[in-house]
Length: 539
Ligand code: TNX
Image (tube, rainbow, N blue to C red; front, side, top):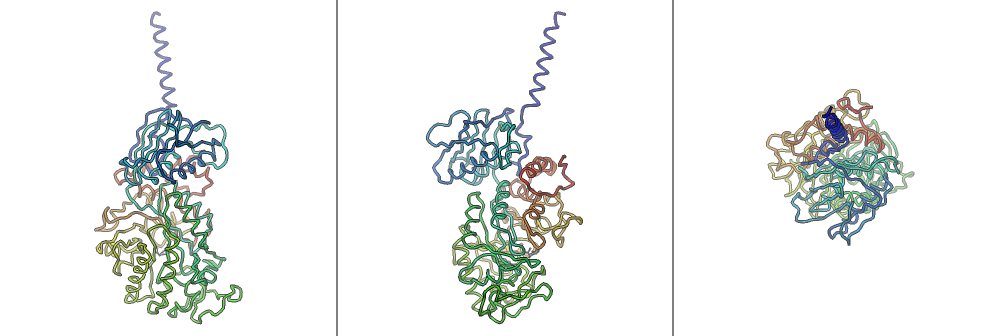
């Protein structure tokens, strides 16, 4: 009986440690997408409370803006109104955002040190801090994503250290606002979702046969006529220059660069319907052609060669008149106005599927378009077909369909953006039962969207030739925000992980598990996502 008290206490101790073990958060179990390079947990937790402060270290106007972003994010759900300070030493319980140029975490990398007493996020650039905040956000309970006050949640995160930086500099998505128009609010919503996954490029496909979506002051019919409809014959729409600048600024605050695309010389019917001078004489496919209602649109003096508007989805029937000088005046004006309101380095000139432009006309056209882009201080991106032309130094080819084109671009010294239609196209159906989308390239289930390797797509194109990855969403069949979300989620997170994580660290099983938590977050955010049967989403 003498050993009884000992046994009793030993049992109690075992019980205690096993219980507290269950409660101990382990940072490595948290579902972060994209998976950070290094996560080391220390088994405790930090809790946000009333007097937690945000402490800024470093001198940068953007730092204040980043801190306001974090403050707002936290306030939405927690209703904690965290104060920001720069003067004093960080007190107990502070969130420190430190800009430290000497930190060697790469241009967009960050380090996150969380202890029981404080959170310290450091980076050598503002972008790094912003991406670190996205990681921090994913460590909080999913309810943080609710935009209104939540009660009964302890705002705790696990302690430990995360060191992280991206594999590719270009991590992008494309939204086709030409086939169906999307409002400024919809685009901003998409920008917010991309930011959550550390994407840093949004390519806007601003013109196509069915619609012209950006105001060009020197060619006003482009929007009054060219912007007046869309696939299926809806009323279409366009962004005024003010609205476009507003989108650009919104994206900039989220460290996302807007890349505007004017697709040329094919995919231009909306321009040809607006200005007959640009039309070499093409007519639109009879089915889905719509007469321009000049009286209703208030346009006069339309050139007799102007084509009709087009609301179908056939591709490849249109071309600009590549032999007319006015065409180059048009391209010059459009690029000039676009460049003036685009702070990012790139302008996308399209160049795809110009099936009715002869190669002998296509090549000089692309050469001249690139020169015009360069004249206004920007770098050209074009779909892989542009490799037939002489690429200017720095021009980028976007691989979507033809491997030989991508290889030709690389042989000219260009870098490539990887957007293989069979893997990265978000408009491809998940399987044969998917109602939205197309399947000309492939059915792309989640595993297919995740399990591909950019450096293994084209013989002779390796890591150093690849600027990054982009997932395009073409919108022939996508008409609104909810449909957009359904095609984008969850596949965009697979693309984000491919773009951020080195290939050795990619892990389908781990990704699939982490998605379960993200599914919960999407539900709280009100996102309509595809519940892939490959993921155990839970109830
Ligand atoms: C091909 S991808 C196109 C687009 C279509 C898309 C539909 C590319 C450069 N051209 O015009 O919208 O397929 O998936």
